[in-house]
Each structure stands twice: as C-alpha cells, then as structure tokens.
Length: 140
Picture 1 (cartoon, rainbow, N blue to C red):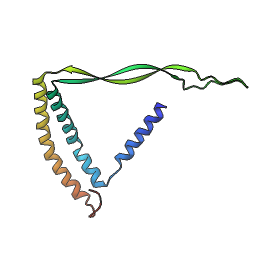
Picture 2: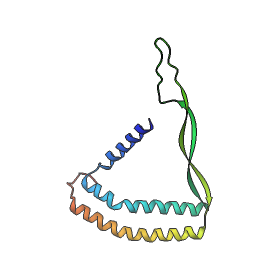
Picture 3: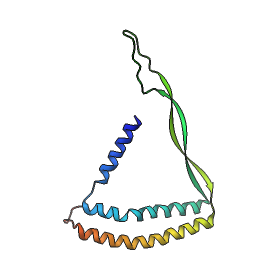
C-alpha cells in the first residue's frame, strides 16, 4: 500500500506543478531558489535565536500489522489473517549544540546570496512577463 500511496503523491505533485498560466510557471521557476534561500535564512535566524539547532534522523521501527499476503483457505474453512512485523521509518528531530559564530557566518553568506538572487529574479520575472503576456483579469 505504501507504493500506491507514494505513486498517488507523486502524481499529485506532478499535476500541481503543471498548474498555473505559462507566465506563473515561468515566474515560479525563476524565483524558486530565492524562496529556498529565504527559508534557510529564517531557519538560521531561528537557530541563532534559540541557541541550538535540530538534527533530523530517520529511525527504523517495527509494527505488528496484518500481512499483505492473503493465505488461501481450505474449502469451508475461515481464512485467518496472519500478522507480521513490518518495518517503517520514523523521522525524529533532536536538539544539537551549535557554534554561534559559524551560524552567524552562514547567515551573512545566505543574506549576500539572497541579494544577488533578488537582482537575478527581478530580471527573470520581467523576462517571463515579456515572454508570456497575460490578458487583463487572467492569472496574477
């Protein structure tokens, strides 16, 4: 069932990526990296303010569940549902110590990168609007 759920999620993401007008898609692509840098800046500022960071680990755990296989019953007999130990991955977030000076350097580098990306994104958005002009009242 996990495979099916993963396929449905992937299909949803692909479908949503195709949403929007050509201009909106172009602008979204042109500003994607800027959005990533903005999120990293916010994370780093929060880490500095907290005084510690977080590390995310994936831990394999086991659950007692009904097996995926269905046994074949003898005619006239009830089919028992077998139970199995199934692994699943759990994500655990743990606090970790930080080096405040290193975090400050990282924040300064991210802000410098953001300044450069803003200039690039502004030019790319203008190009998107020129390449894909929209009718009044359509899109954003």
